[in-house]
Image (cartoon, rainbow, N blue to C red; front, side):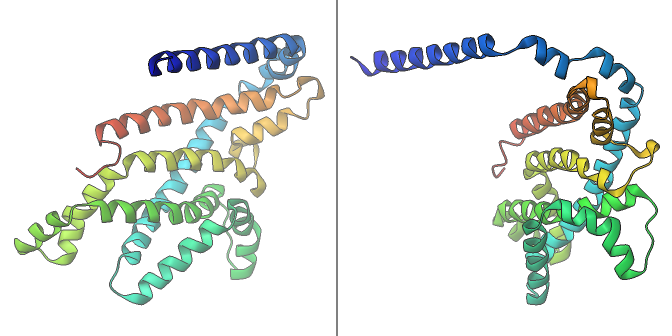
Length: 262
C-alpha cells in the first residue's frame, strides 16, 4: 500500500473506533437517571435568582486577584531580572514558594491564620480573596512576564540605549510594553485559572450576598432530590466566563503570532 492509502486506512480505523465508543456510551448510559441528576428543572429553578449575583461576585473576586497578581508579578519579574543579586534571591524564593504550595492553603491562611498572627482584621472578603489568590497568581505571572521580557529582541534595547535612553526608561517604554504584547495569550489563560480558583473562596465563610458560583452549587446539594443539578448550574456559570476568555486567548494568540518574537 502507498503511504497515502495507509494514512487513509489508519484514519478510517480511528473514526470507526471513536464511533463504536460513542455508540457504546449512548447504549450503556441510563439517560433518565442522568437527566434527573444533572438536568433537574425543579432543583435548578430555586437557584436561578441567585446565579446573577454569584456570577458577579465571582468576576469581582477574579478581577481583584488578577490586579494584585499582575502588580506583584510585574515587580517580581523585574526583580528576577535585576542585576542586584539579593533582589533575584528574594524573587526566586517567593516564586518557588508560592508555586509549590496549594492555593487552598494560602486562602485558609489569609482567612484565619494571618489575621491572628499579625493582629490585623480583614473584614472584606474581596480583599481576602484578592490577597490570597493574587499572591499565588503573582508567582506564575512573574515567570510569564520574565519570559516575555527576555523574548524582546536585544537589538531594540541597544537601539533605545543608543538614542540616549536610560536603562529604566528603556525598560518602561520599550521592553515592558512589547513583553506584555508577547505574553497576552498566556496572561489570558492565567485569568481563566484565577476564575476557577475563586471556587476556594467559600472556605472563608461567606454571607448570602457574598456567595460565588461554587457556594450556591454547594448549597443546592442540600436538596437531596436535586442530585448534582446544583453543581451543573454552577459549572455552567463558570463556563459563561471561561469560554469567552478562552476564545479571547486564541484570538490574541493569532494576532500576536502565538507569542513569538515580533
